[in-house]
Image (tube, rainbow, N blue to C red; front, top):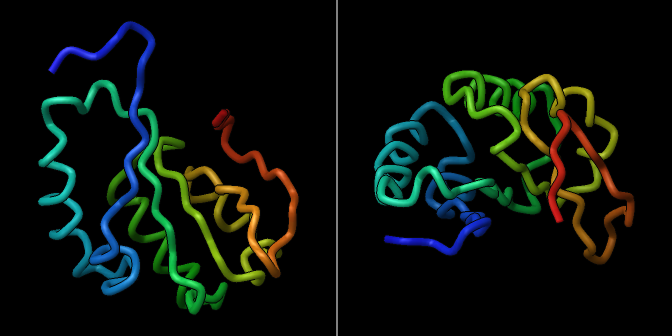
Length: 123
């Protein structure tokens, strides 16, 4: 596939990884299968959006889960996590430690704050 000069993709990760397996260890196999579908354009993918479900709260267990998942993948700030629960806005440092970017969302009940982590610039 030939992409226009300067054109990059952002890919929303399938819900089987984020909603059903919630980034638990069993999500890694599914992630590898999902990611392999994009091999042909991999060098043109700027960001992978991991949109978490609203019931994924910033608990110690879930902080450990994202830390473990993203440490295995070692994606740096090409991994963008979209949290849809307010509790994560108090845990930005924990997200920063994963090397991931924090997706600022304009949604009811969530802060309208622009969050920039790990030198990620997303326009």
